[in-house]
Length: 398
Image (cartoon, rainbow, N blue to C red; front, side, top):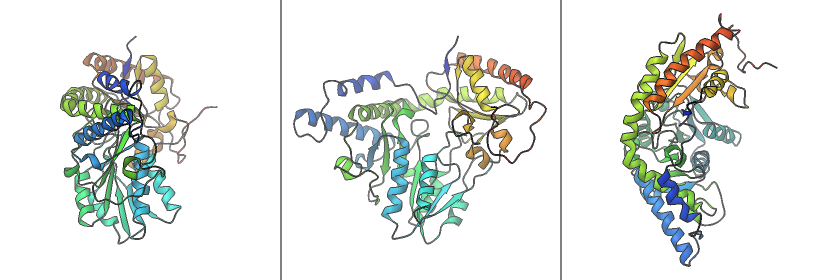
């Protein structure tokens, strides 16, 4: 049976050259970067080389890179760090309704601690309107955080335009770019952002290594207190092997990015074209302004979890935008935000491609997916139409 991985938005395999770069720092080069003797100095040199490589990928300065353990940590660091650093200036924050949970839950935490948060709507393609951002700004606004691209629907936001508004009003602007760095070109100057989160495993680096870009001169309060690591802004002994891996992955990605884009884009388009022939399979997200290897749909009369299980049985590994496939058992807030009815949101599925995806994989998928939909509709109790319901929870049989 074919084994086809189509969930690259969740994570990516480790590039072989990245593993080779990491191994010495898991074995003989085990020093602590703060130690003053030779093993420590070697670790420190490797750390700073990785910082330069990572900065180079996004056209930033090495000193503007703070290494973290995950994109979620970087997002928490950005939002809490700016909120508490600038709370004497104002206590209003703007985010979109389709942010990652690490942004939305942090915003809710801040609301409980005396901050006001505006949650901006998006249109049916999942786009945030720069005009809506500008209207939401008050004299108390200290931070705007808008995701660069949703991992669930793939829509790429007009970050540069929003950044111009923020800069014109002297408001700190952050973007969660975990789904974009390594998948599309990202340039800090053209984006007009002050902070940006990204993670190594999204571009064939290791899990456990990520970064927060902080524009030089931006005030931020540490999320983790302790030692003087990362310029005193993020305490804790650095994960040197993982950071070395992130640096190497960044170097490879800068070299290979356009080749990766050119590879996955026609494969994505093939999926979208073929899925459009399936009755009541609706593309979610912007049809053109989306991640190169990202195709997402809601399929009426079928639950996402059922599609995932039958796809997996055929050797195709994918994801569902519906949290029905998780322990949360709630409809996706992203899909609800773009106007997908609750009953349709249960039938979401997301396919994301990588450099290992082949035309043969997609040909097999394009043949298999319609068959699965047809089979599931034959056995679905909802095949004659879903009943309207205001219940936002998933349908769970007990």
